[in-house]
Image 1 (cartoon, rainbow, N blue to C red):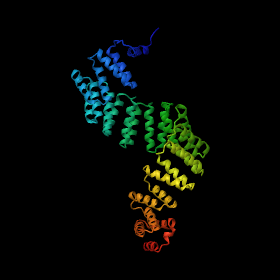
Image 2: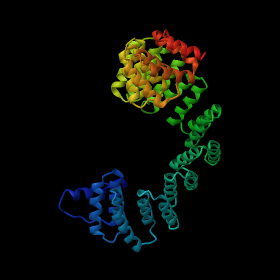
Image 3: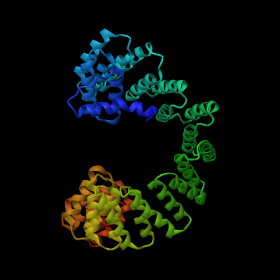
Image 4: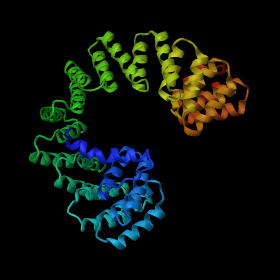
Length: 462
């Protein structure tokens, strides 16, 4: 039987794994061991890689490359002292081996000593003609230091060596974006495309920059060129759909999102956007169908559940809205927006205890909006729990000490409980901060507004 090239490549690996199942130790040359170890590291099979390194060094104890793999394992396992010691030995044996410098830099990086890592990598540049990987590593170290200008320089060097290094291209644009240099990114991408006119990734990134500037006409043209360069580029169709939405060309946006569903696995983002487009076209039946498809595809996507809930809210079908927001809460009970919607829907259904519970949960989850404090406090007043309402509004004052709406409510509550001193204190504060909200006393505390003391305080400030 004639063996293919791939079969020959697999023979050492097959032979090695067969050897592990027996007591027979077979001989491999050092390069075969290197390929076996490299395979296991790529597969994340660390235990097997370690076995191969041990057996390899037993047979080839002087191999620097096999010992470098041992360094790599040490670094992976955070045994940085052992890694450093072994590297120093290897450096004495072969001071011109760039891989020794790369691993040394890796150790510095692991210890957050990124300046030293960069220094070592720059020395490695002097020892090799294969500079692309080193440029990339230096760029990444500069990113760790938040030195985006320097990082950008080295990622651009990567692209000067290899125009198809798309990882470097993404990193260049990331640096431009972080530096808020959108125009700079556009200039760079246009210059890049002059030399590489069929680079779909560059067209895609150019379109995103124009989108940021709200230049939708140029963004659309860029995404068109991305699709001409690669008509299976899902990202370009998605971005093109977003632009068409901004231009209110909803039917065309739907077409673009639908193409992505044919080219790739269904995307919850595309399904949701199609739903929103149908909503804009007043086709509610199709809109809600796509919202259902969205949550079926990705139950954790909160925007899908929120879209369904708000859809039924608009239809005034509050029972259905409540049903779906409850489903959402059962999936993710820590989502603040879910609890806010839950409270608002229960309020519309006059289920005040449930609404109050929802607002309380919203606050517990870290939502500190004034409206949440006011809504919860007003519900507690309605439920006849003045002490709990006072505690709620006093907590609100910690974040909004000058807010008149809170102060008027506290004044009304204290007057209701016959605590004249505290009621007067809060009413004076409220009037000083904003007289226009004095109607709150009439609306929420009609009995209090009839008290002569309250009337006099209100008149004094008119």
